[in-house]
Image 1 (cartoon, rainbow, N blue to C red):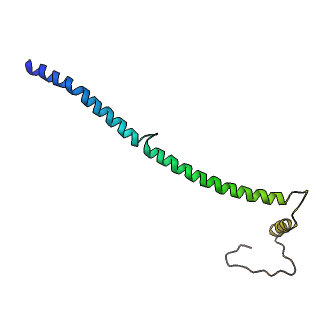
Image 2 (image 1 turned 90 degrees about the horizontal axis):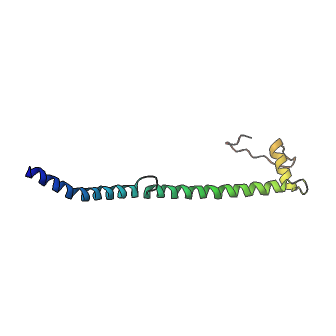
Image 3 (image 1 turned 120 degrees about the horizontal axis):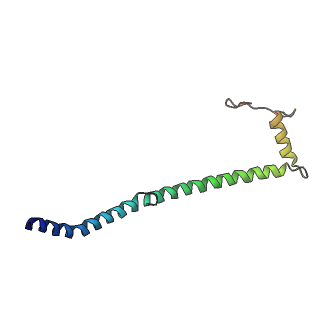
Length: 107
């Protein structure tokens, strides 16, 4: 009976530290892993960097297309841009132009 009582007393003394170590381990693990851990934060930061690069490239492309569209405005057409569009769409060549074909070109 004395041995059983001593085991219970020691078990009660160990419950607090064991629970504390387990809780600390849980929080340390989730500091690095999990949805909001350090690794997830690093991944999100990398995705944000890539998204900003894609956005910058898309904005440059959009600005180029906007400039091209502005040149085709019916109220003030850019003659060079109009000529370029007509030639590329209809595959036309001027009588005094020389055509140089590259092996990889489809035209």
